[in-house]
Length: 294
Image 1 (cartoon, rainbow, N blue to C red):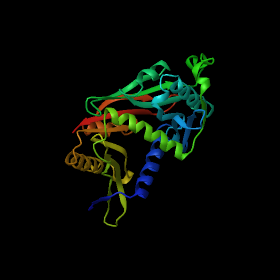
Image 2: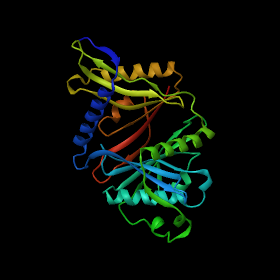
Image 3: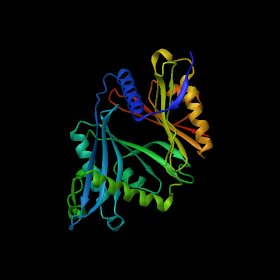
């Protein structure tokens, strides 16, 4: 059978994500799932200005885990307990929604020590990403009493108000975090999309990969999928190697990916090393962070 590589469309990427989520459900049937949802929290000063906030991601393929995808505090208000206040409120909301694990990633020039003070532990590290820096993946069980948060009886946190935010607030948070990051590791370029699909002689997609080169010259693999009837034919490896080749041509020096129990062997077979893993208890999948030098 003849195959052809073509660019991936947004609709194709959505289809691949759905199929990957289906595979996670089959591998961990006791792990409940939910529709994906993004929740924004914002902190305001007396003038109603957004001076900090956090963005939480719920649902998807690991519904009992909340991802603290962003947390930012305006530099004028740092060191006043606002970051801790946002962490505690984010965890409280996630706990009420039935989450038992909170996870996040933070850079060495962001706030790893603050998260450690709140009970987060490192489960994976990407060294030299971006160059001369490190990324830490951290997690925490949040289904019990939090002595760190419950011990805050007043203090500077009472000066601030935390509310639910909007898409505009999310943009303020993202811009503020990027301004901070650019002081230490400015983006070298815009993201370069490398997503591809394999189609058969009838033009039907039978395999696809969602990937790109980010602004720090890292090649990320967001999702990939091969239809059951076409597995064990090397199609996934063919797609991965094609992305790696183009990533190198575009200056990428490192490949990063995450995988689950059922597909981590594929990435290891193709030269990826395990940077760490998160066990999503109870009865949840193991999420592996993987790296390969290009």
